[in-house]
Length: 489
Image (cartoon, one colour):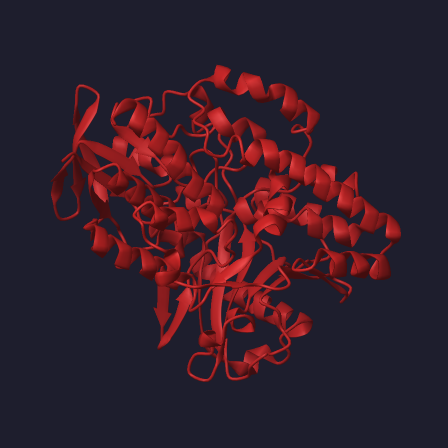
């Protein structure tokens, strides 16, 4: 039986491990951290458990497929709960808007709070999103773009859907109210992009959410990871934790072994779920052959500051997902993405899982995480110095906007900064999502799912096609599977 090594156990690594096993490979997953999951691993602090990463599950069929490949039912391993509404948008003037769950209810709220024109405009926007979804998602998300010419057949349709426009400018052409424009153009931030520069292809997320809904795993995202761990044991997929890959050994353009901090593993095939911008210089010790992937021209996503905390009080009126917009919008994003400076007025994403799943009432306390987009480590911000200050800014904003008296209610808290993403997750310059989802970094222009440098090296995850987000990284494994079957099957 051929041997395959998967480096990293994020959703992309878990997905390709399942697919490789279905292809009759002897699979071993190597994970640097003490537990599986990558960005979706579990963090423990003072007797509390927190999901480190993805809290929004969409297109759940992609996860279900990985179990059905092995004639297993994912519902025997974990349970998904619908989140309603998808998000509450809280604006700087104190007003709010609930997005998702019922289109009819949402349109009625739009007419009441904003205008009939905005409600009509949103339906047109959703229709446009569906057209993008039918092309960019259904046809291209698991299509291997091996050459520049492979993109040419899709250019006419991409022109018709105006891929060259940004998400923000596209949304603005359908809606009038500035609050609604902010809210309906926020989706690129979920995959590491600036709404003002991200290609409008990512408007497809609007329709994708409506088509399949927004979910949360009962017991936390960690229950999905635990489900994969159980599946691995059943399928004899081996995994090693506390096992950091530090190099590879190759001959004649082919990897024959992977070197870790404590062992050397022989292999016939390697799939990396590691950020390619880290993997090339630090592990391969080479530069990518594709000119589009040269470090000097790549734009990486913002960094993330995530504060995890639990409170004595249970804030029962707070929704599962709340996005809190700051007064500044475009200028704030420019400070984060372009100027890369320290900010003290972040917009925030607040996650309160107990709104959907009472199992997240831990130790009779409400548990949260709040995420703030910040500059990645291409900035000169010293988070060892600035971390506590930024944490205080977040707590103050939450106290004023949504969680009264928060400072006095907190009984447990800690935070992670871009330093965690860089040092613990091996993400280039602490970027939260790898390279940005701009058009010149999409499809063929992203890092290749099959290495151009070594014949048996492949990539999955946010850096490869189709990109970041749970549907993106799981779909990347489908792309990579097709390439492995073609070249190494």
